[in-house]
Length: 150
Image (cartoon, rainbow, N blue to C red; front, top):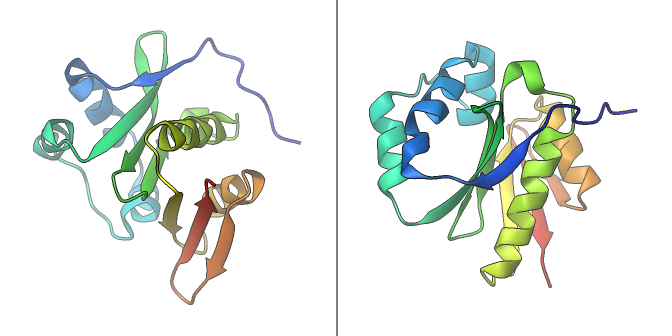
């Protein structure tokens, strides 16, 4: 049985003023976490976070607790999305809450399908996909989850 979120958490759309908090979230990730997120060992720079915030091809939802950003989920115009949760806040339902928020946002935007790619060993993301009704396609080096929003 999954633990539930116990902290007072706000899930909201990102603002330009969140750049530093998102940068700190990414800095809290281990090399293994970064590999799971990017399929490579890539340490995100402050400039990359600034670039993400300046682009107009996506919506980013943030999970915040006590002024600290503890989760980030980004939905791109083509329907692909990604999720990052602070290592200390995992297994609480936060990732599921963020993806649920992206599903609602995708429907508001009129998207017909949303999807994610993950590594086969990223069991938490696969579990979220199963729980929320995504169809999963397993390949040798990746898993694609797809949800039709019709």
